[in-house]
Amino acid sequence: MTGTTLPGTDALRERALAALGAAGVTPPYGEGLTARTPITGEALFDLHATTASEADEAIVAAAGAFRTWCTTPAPARGGLVRRLGELLRVHQSELADLVTIEAGKIRSEALGEIQEMIDICDFAVGLSRQLYGRTIASERPGHRLAESWHPLGVAGVISAFNFPAAVWSWNTALALVCGDTVVWKPSAATPLISLACSGLLDRAAQDVGVPREVHRLLLAGREVGEQLVDDSRVALISATGSTRMGREVGPRVAARFGRSLLELGGNNASIVTPSADLELALPGIVFAAAGTAGQRCTTLRRLIVHRDIADEVVERLVAAYRKLPIGDPFAEGTLVGPLITAEAAERMRDALNRAEAEGGKVLAGGGRRLAEDAPAAAYAEPAIVRMPEQTAVVRAETFAPILYVLTYRDFDEAIALNNAVPQGLSSSVFTRDQQEAERFLAADGSDCGISNVNIGTSGAEIGGAFGGEKETGGGRESGSDAWRSYMRRATSTVNYSSQLTLAQNVSFL
Ligand code: UN1
Image (cartoon, rainbow, N blue to C red; front, side, top):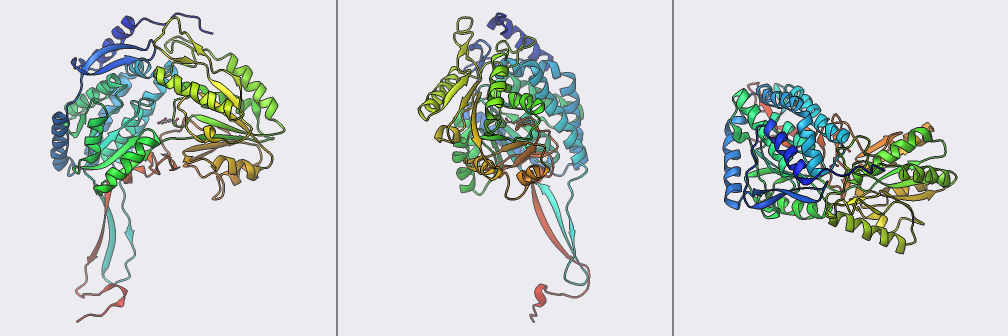
């Protein structure tokens, strides 16, 4: 499908420059970092990479700005985020262009990513008047026991290529209203959208009269990321990426008693029960598994289907996969864009080979498309693989559109399969049976941070806390009370009597 030819790299370069220009950004041409596009797999611009000493200066600047920002009233801090949200609304289309150019997302998903940023800005503005502490009944007469939430310090944000803008905004909008300043190290694969986001925040700061040092961008590779992780002036490291990355970041931050918020790999499953409404389940499954070319941390990777309906479900999914339009993510009608790199396609190929070696049968997809039009790009056909059991390859996250299908006999077995992987991000059940739905959501049901009923595993709204358990890292970002990770809690006991009363009835003197 979509036999349309791909846009050329020159046209994409022009389009990227126009989008950056609209955001008021001139690319910092130089050496050390190359902006590329997965649409053709080719290079767009050579950029100046932030050096170690520039990164140090950025941390110093953000730490300096924290001293005044932390005492700026929270609703006034919200004013900066409100202005950012306004600018994101104005520039939604160009920002989406950059997400498509650098991450390969189809138009609707790229626009959706910017919408997620606008939504979190709205949320954070409201939150700027709701950073509530509690008052607690004191056991002593004439005493007040209370807690306050105070800004934490510099928040270091490390983000991945697949949500290059939204994950920054979840962290940054919250951190800023919480009174933290931010140093951002985005994926080296997505410098252009990072420049645009950072440029708009600079502009928002200028518009509302806030020092632009409340936010600093580091465009660099791994070493500068490590520098940020190891710097004790950075109070919080919020890192999104692979479990492998988190396994390095978590202990390093802990070694200096810093705080970390980890958002790592997922290996998300949906259970399809005999009572499921397949008209609803099938499109939900296809979006969750093949959408974003399988490159969301919430992507559906395992389908656990009741054995009585497995053949029908698989047959209908295979038919849907055969029709998936794969190609230019800018073209109308395309549903599956490119993988981020040729290496990602190789990892997909390896996983499919392993799945076959472990007894799996590839029922759809797995091939490569558009190899002649764009030899350096990686357009992969989303794959469906029927597995005899939950083997090693199924238990590992491969960041590519592979859906492993497993079958179950009774619901306990389905829940056990759902939970029998090292990751714990997202999960869902398709059922019309209330007992099954509630059981899935109960304490002995899904062990994931996100558990859904009658929708897929991906595409969470910003209002809920986002994150997961086990190897997913345990962090929570975005909505609900995730803001607390960006603040420190002070518990205060105030004695307004003229007696010194000790707690626990202790007597002394
Ligand atoms: C990610 O893939 O890192 O729930 C984030 C979702 C999106 C966020 C995904 N709102 O799929």
